[in-house]
Length: 327
Ligand SMILES: [Zn+2]
Image 1 (cartoon, protein in one colour):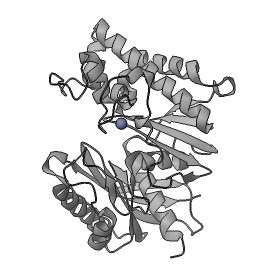
Image 2 (cartoon, helix red, strand yellow):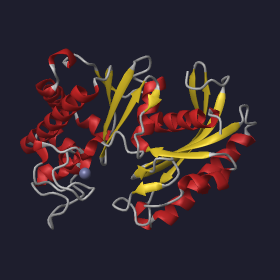
Image 3 (cartoon, rainbow, N blue to C red):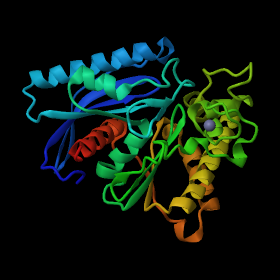
Image 4 (tube, rainbow, N blue to C red):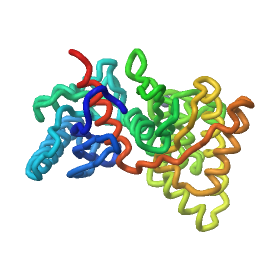
């Protein structure tokens, strides 16, 4: 699956999220991916893009040298960097990410990593990589197409059709969080615009709903997030339960609308908000069924299966796909 090359193949993969930065060598054989020599550090986005870029290069070099010290049974031939923000169409630079980290827009991630590691590198979105990983080897393995939705710190998405990641003309395909929703009217999104679904469905958005104040308002407290609300709900806080139901229904409704546009074979739900509990999950399904056209009502809503390694696996697969192409 994946490339025309004989397997096994190996790629260095990076997963740069809002809180964690992970790197590993992913060895992909006919029987699936093996994640080797994984290492993880805090991303520390508050220290700015130059710091994070240096941390990425340092962590990847350490993982590569660790892998080589273990004999490197399959040589590393490429690097895939899955990162927060919007990649450009060529998979080289960050096209837009100033809202996430100072100095991130324009960062030449692929060139910097290629120089640090000595292998070709490609940049893609973190949830795009997550989607590809789940489509090749996770919950959506074997499905003709897969829409992956990941509510976490933000709300990301990815689309895989016939085994290929859909990246779009500008590299942005799958940015589901920035669709307008009636459920998010008047709420400020992380991208700066008003009324996007992320504003009420990400971990931050659930906190905003609970507080009745969006992220732009002076009395918004970021410490009250989705995990905090889920904990309160489990302790019997009725407001917390109502907010989880409202957020889950809003996201489900949006997914139903997206399904009408894309007609995916399966829908994979990833992201940390997925752990919010039964109230959220039941509302998500109700919301989905409220919007999906009749023939799409029973499209499976599957839980992501690869856990924290999904983006690493997808980034490696994407890098190996690209390196197999003639120059
Ligand atoms: Zn937005």
